[in-house]
Amino acid sequence: MNRSAKRHSLLQLAFLSGAIASTATLSAFAPVWCRSVRAALQDSPKAVIDNVWQLVNREYVDGSFNKQDWLAVRQSLLSKDYTNREEAYTAIRQALEKLGDPYTRFMDPKQYEALTSQTSGEVSGIGVRMALNEQTQKLTIIEAIENSPALKAGIKPGDYILAIDGKPTSQMKVEDASKLIRGRAGTKLTLRLGREGQNPFDVNLTRASIEVPTVRYNLRQEGDRRIGYIRLREFSAHASTQMRRAIRDLNAKQVDGFVLDLRGNPGGLLQSSIEIARMWMDNGAIVKTVDRVGGSDEMKANHTAITKRPLAILVDGNSASASEILTGALKDNNRAVVVGSQTFGKALVQSVHELADGSGVAVTIAHYYTPKGTDINHKGIAPDIKLDLSDAQKRQLAENPDLQGTQSDPQYARALAVLSSKNFAQPTQQNQQSRQQPMSNRAVDLKL
Image (cartoon, rainbow, N blue to C red; front, side, top):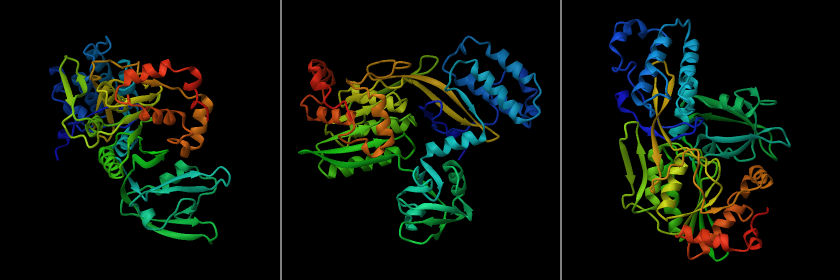
């Protein structure tokens, strides 16, 4: 496939990966005066600098470039000599800072590789989640991912890793262990494991490309109601497929309603958020994007919803970008009631490009608006039912993840109350009811 044909839009936080795109090494949009030096630039660090400048010049959402003389910036960048790529990378970052946009940013090859891995929804390794057990100080398996080499080899939660390819893990950080375990698909790895009641034993594994679960779900029996609880961690390339599977499975179990947990979800791929919105709503607008010349593109539902059962969405201050697109679409169309804290407030769209040396650049190309035309940038989405957690509550849920999405989780408990109301599909009325309740009743679920 031609690399330049792989361009996509995305929504992301500054630290979040997004849609991956590739472009030609040098743009054809350069001013005439630079064409004579293009051949000389091709094999120098200036080639990457020039490519980044061209991409920003062509795509950046603010045509004034934050009131910078962008041509002068290019001349300044190319007038200097760079002895290595690191110097060029530093110069690029300094130039992009002039735009005043944290989301338009340069990534060195390692950062770009990490981004592509994250947004692809796949990793190359053996498929385990692990952590350092605070009591034993041992590197411990938390989960062996479905269909992974680790699960097929019989690795279980609670197993602790004693050595990786003969290298002891005593005093080893989780990050360092991850680097040793990950590797190219098809390569071999040996783990020495410990398990309660058994002598240490070796497990031989072959690394593989593994789809990372970004959707987790289960059926909750809450009194006489059956609730489908779905937690979406990020909008990766596999998120929509996993979401569809979750909704259909829970539908088959005859749930009475759904709770969709987007708390802590920093965003991801634009297309993924659109596809997931269409699973919940048959009609209505989802999002509108506007570029720097006023060109707009509106995405709508297309009569492909796979459930019409009541829905409540949980959000917090770390629900951002694609999370806000999905939340805004379902809220503005009265398809869901939103419970929790004000969302992050990122209404910008980026495209991401791979550069010739393996580095990459993300460029903000558009602004987006919710179906009702609301600009949430730097503001966020106000929940229909605002319920902020105290620091103590946040700490308890963070330290005990199994409590999230249970009756010990105040925001989840409040969502259950919403789903029990006949007004679940009318957020404004529900919010008014919430405000009219006596404070003593509203505070029932606020303490852990």
